[in-house]
Amino acid sequence: MSEQRRQILQMLAEGKVTADEAERLIDALARQQQPEPPPAAYDRPKRRPKYLRVVVHSEDNGAGEGPSRINIRVPIQLLRAGVKLASLVPPQALHKANAEMAKSGLPIDLTQLKPEQLEELVDQLDEVTVDVDDPGSKVQIFAE
Image (cartoon, rainbow, N blue to C red; front, side):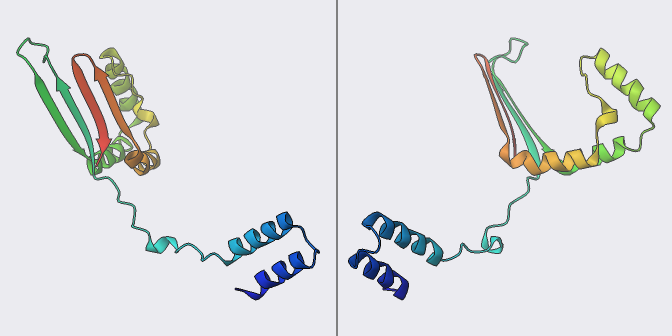
């Protein structure tokens, strides 16, 4: 038993503190004496994802030929390279590409893609899992 704990019990015995006060003091003393958590260096390093995976299971492939399975694994490094390449394209060409993609039903603004944003997205990918359940198909998007 530590000297401080002994003093608290002595004050309780002498009536200088109530039982509730003594309990709070002992709890506070215990919190101070708890060992510090190990530094973050001992934690397992966070593994960065290397791939963005898209898996589609469909009962009907749209052509009436029965079930189909699509499994796409895109290297994250390819996404990084694509964003860096997009930053080299002249703004006029990006605007034309945006217009053509919008006509095709893909409204993405390539002028807004920045390498820093991609890195932030990659850092958050291990937290992301998207599951879409449809009566005829299932889509999963996740990082690995």
